[in-house]
Length: 294
Image (tube, rainbow, N blue to C red; front, side, top):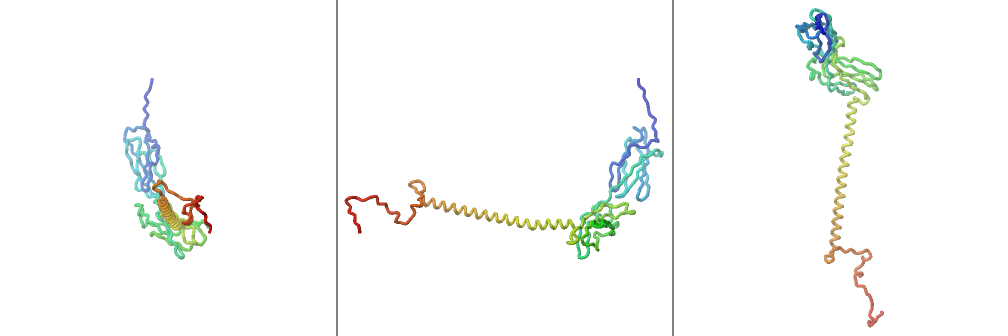
């Protein structure tokens, strides 16, 4: 035995499983499911987007029969904070969530140039890689003194450099540059940070490391080159001496070669002497030869 039960759709239920699929700098993709499975008619949803920074509201309408709904909220601001509410058009129960958009990137190639009584911060324009950034917005600069444990706001500029004066000898500083914060510091860009810890020598840490590595390379490379040249010359000298000795030995053996015997003849050291030694040796005397003694 069995019985078929058909549930009556309740349009007062809220959308289910509301969540964010992807968040960018100026958009957010959200997703949810209908209040009940397999709707048999089009359902009208109201998507309310509240800007928690600007304190403004926008409402979008979505009409669909799908059980799973995916919607893209556009025209958001980088680094913004939003509260999203989704409910049926009849103002039923709601589902809500918060979204934070991706802030603007940090400026690239932050460098420090040391002058006599001040330093200059340089960086690349953020507009080169961020289409949503306008140079008129400008940048703001912060400084952290690690010795005093104090963070100071140095100011803002629309240029790509900033002058910093009145630095104290023996203090270590960290400088950060970012897109200027909007709406009381609630909407900022990512900061680019650079450590400046060798004020006595007028160099930042990154410049010091690179200069030291350059100095080491400038010393090591010539030394290695000289060693290679010396080894090459040594091999050439040894090779020439070896060839000379080989030629001398060949000439010596050729001068002592006997074609009759088919071999070289070498005399011992005892046989070497004056030409008189080459005279034949007297082996004896005959009895009929008188001996004359002068």
